[in-house]
Structures are given as C-alpha cells and as structure tokens.
Length: 366
Ligand code: IPM
Ligand code: MG
Picture 1 (cartoon, rainbow, N blue to C red):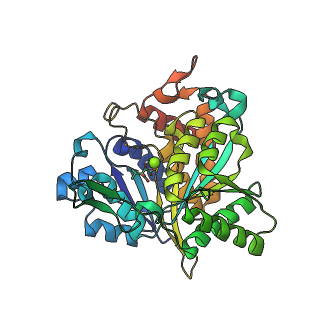
Picture 2: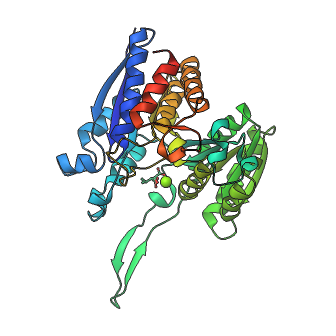
Picture 3: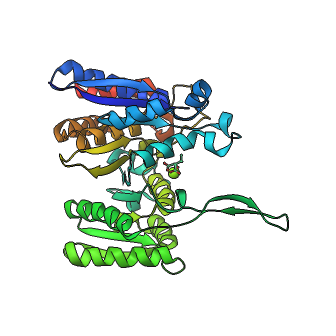
C-alpha cells in the first residue's frame, strides 16, 4: 500500500489545538489498516517567523510542493502584527497558495440541522442551507502589480494595489464552478462589480461565454458583489454555487460562514489544476482564523479542521466513503448535543477541544 503523504502545517493560535484532533483521526484511519497516511509536520506563519525569521522557509515550501496534500491550521496573531509586510504570518499562507498555484478555493457553507438555531439569522432562513462559494485564490488585487506604498513629490504618500484578471484566469475558475454546479443544484451565481470595474466587465463576459459554450444546462445568473452580500443575509437559500474573485470571495465567504452559526464550523479546500494523471496540488484549511483570544485554552472548535480533512479525503484521495463516514460521525456528535463554546446552546453539553475530538472518534467507532 503506497502511503499518502500529508504535510501538516498547524500554524499559530488555535491552529495546533484543532489540528491535534485531526491527527487523532488520521492515526485512527491508519490503525484500521485500509489506508496509510504518512504525516510530516512543518511551520508556517508566526511560529515559522519566530523559529526561522520568515513565515515560510524554502524547505517547507518544497515539502508542500511534494506532498500529496497539505493540511493547514491557521496563521497570525497580535504578536506579529507590527512586522514588515513581507514577514507577516499571512505572507506564508499567500506564498503557499501562489507557488502551489491553488487557484480554486472551495468554501462550502452548510447548516447542520442541529445547529440551525445557533445562527444569528432566523432558523427558517438557514435550515437546510447548503451553498458552495468558489473563490478565485491566486489572482486579483491580492497579487496584482503594481502594488506598494510610494511617496509623491508633494510629500503625500500613496498606497497602490491593482485588481487584474486575464481571460484564462477567469475561465479556469468559472469552469470549476460550473462543474460543481452540475453535480449540485445546476445553478451558478457569478459575482463581481461590472458596474464600476473593467475587470468585472471582463469577468461577466467570459463567464457568460463559457456558460453558453459548455454549460447550457446550468442556470447562470450575474450579481453585483454588494447585492450578493445583502442577498446572503436576506435569503441565503436562493444560492447554490457562487463564483467570485479573490477579494469578494474573502468577504462573502466570511459572511456566508456566519449564516451557519459559527465560523468554527466551516472547512475549505484550495485546489490547483489537475495534471496528466488527474492529480491536483491541494491545501485544506478551516475558514476560521487563529483566534488568538481563545488560543491555548482548549476551548476551540475542531470541527472545521476535521471537516477540512474530510474534504481532503474526498478531493485529494477519492475516498468518498471515508469522507462520508467522518462527516456522518460529526453530524451524530452534534445531534447528540455535544457543543464547543462557540456553538453552545441551551440544554446542550459543553465540551472542550479534545472532548469534541473524543466524541468524534467515539462516533467513528474507535
Ligand atoms: C482567508 C483569510 C486570508 C485571506 C488571510 C489570512 C490572508 O482571510 O483565508 O480568508 O485574506 O485570504
Ligand atoms: Mg478571509
């Protein structure tokens, strides 16, 4: 049995605590003997800066390139807030995305029945919600040139970032979204600001062309990003798949995440293009950040990180049965009333990070 190699970059804040529960599940899968995961640990973010003076070393970058999949916890924290831009923890994550060419970021927002009441929105608005946000991840204003801060002749300073998309960048992310929509509700919302941005006009034209040429059976709708934010809290169940650029995707996915009750629940997958053998570079991470305010207390919710591992099983290793098994275990734990602090409800049983890990392992039959 060829081992599947996983590089684990737990990162900062609650990253290591939640990743610990994933490692327990990996150990359990290995012990069952049907698969073999070979796990290696590395540093990214502030912890890497502290150890090596950089948020990601070339050596770790190379390991990420070579691994079958990368599991990431979270990066950042107030300790590193005042570092120069290039040394900030977030640069480590952005370099991973860019150098691995992980252009397709899948951010599902779904509501577990047991948690419908934990949403800040009315229960009937979110019960059964299942939206997939497809965020472009290696282009747009995050990486566009020119960028920087310059001093003008009059002594004023000017900050510059550039929103830029090429047709091929738009088409490849739209194709991922159309394909996902085909397997789901056959409905795609493409989101930009074509009313004020040329890059948005191009985005709309290219997505429209691709839809007409290759996906006539998918119902395509265009929406401005500001309206989409409003519609997500007004009537989120109108959406099935949303495709959007890097910056709008960052904002809209946080917004969608909160519909589900807690940022602590949502996984994500970042995928590259498939090579000749169909294999993609891939990185899996919870959408929540490093949550420095609760780090080290053993109260963080590990479910987003565990669900990210389920996405890894599904998308990197084609292990749909195991992914289903893990997701079903998590659902059973929620149905049984176990809750970490962030999703605590009246009458439920509060558990710690490792207590939630215990419950998931027990539900898996460990
Ligand atoms: C995210 C985060 C990152 C982003 C940060 C940590 C760089 O907010 O993954 O959504 O802005 O992409
Ligand atoms: Mg974000």
